[in-house]
Length: 345
Image (tube, rainbow, N blue to C red; front, side):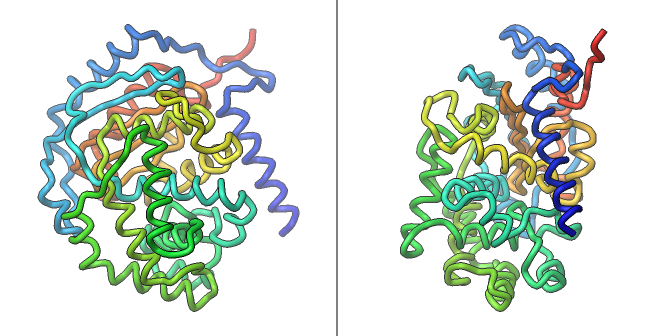
């Protein structure tokens, strides 16, 4: 077991080295990140995919079914703070599961990577994002902050003497990542809060196994509220760019988290960021990413940029159809998949 753990640890650090763009006997493919090229590609992607009609809005949260399915916004923010946008970046959607990334980062910042691994877990569960079976099989262990059980546990770990303090801290951290003060979509929050019995059950099961670190009802409520935070494509791209920039928001220049926090956040995004299709996404793009059923999807190109798309219609796995197509197109055209390696001559 210890040998297997060491091998996995070495593999993760090797992966991170590749992603960071360091050289270990090879060179990454050169890419053109000029203003003209990025603007051209976003225009092309918008035109190419704006008429895609695949997918449908999430409806298990009743309020999400009412969101305009035609919202389509693209944003890319480079690590030098340049912001590129195309389409609708004013319309807001609820952040939903994308918030999990930044709560995980917050807990990493407060408690360190070993605590997250020990108290929550970092492995992909191999089951649905809201699986109760995954909790039962592992007795609350070996879940991760990108799925509901691990995300609720992560929320319960955020520092704060009471529910109000924890919520205030979470909202401020998400706002720091976005570079502006974010607010909650109250209709979405009310809709979710009235129908979150499954998440409450998960929280109580975690409590039974000693894996819930604050009141389960209050923790579930805070988690529900964080998922209802309103964001647009520019917000999400700025949040992704803050991770791409080692924890410093490239637009506001504020240090949000440390590079070490980013180091441990990105691998979990890579392995569990897009629900059941996480492996398919990573296979096709090479970039850590996170989606939410509100229609937002962001991806991190370490050291280069963050990119995000908002488009509510989802595929069967719960990921925005247009967002996946746009980001994959931009990644391919810019040749920024870190596993696309140019042999040394």
